[in-house]
Image (tube, rainbow, N blue to C red; front, side, top):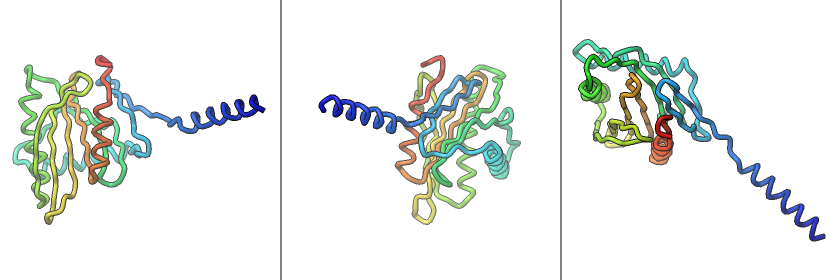
Length: 197
């Protein structure tokens, strides 16, 4: 009887372990040697939607800047995963060949100004902060925007950018709930760059 109980307990333990295992999905961008885990219960957006989002963003920026708008090369979407209409992590790269060392860092403040003006032109209140953050040995410039309208918070956007392997690497985290922001930022902080694993 004791043997049967032990076998039953062992079988139940194996079943519980197998049921509790979650399928882990990763995305890897070979151009920049970057790997990120896709959180469970977040939806990966299809490529045509990503390309349409990029096109709309570029058009919005062009409408709000006085000078000729030039990002560098053509923006290449890597991945977007979302929880709802607003809450998402979107990663893309733009080929950027520096004509002199440090050119990317010289242009970065202009990009922040363009993005700020895009939101401001939509009759919303925009509060911004900037800082740097190290993720897996790579230093990112971080631009945080809190968007509100009629004294009500609408959304928050945290833009991470860095220059790596000849690319302007951009990660936009947009969230309408603090929990989603926390999940996305933790997911990003857990991501790895191959040379720094």
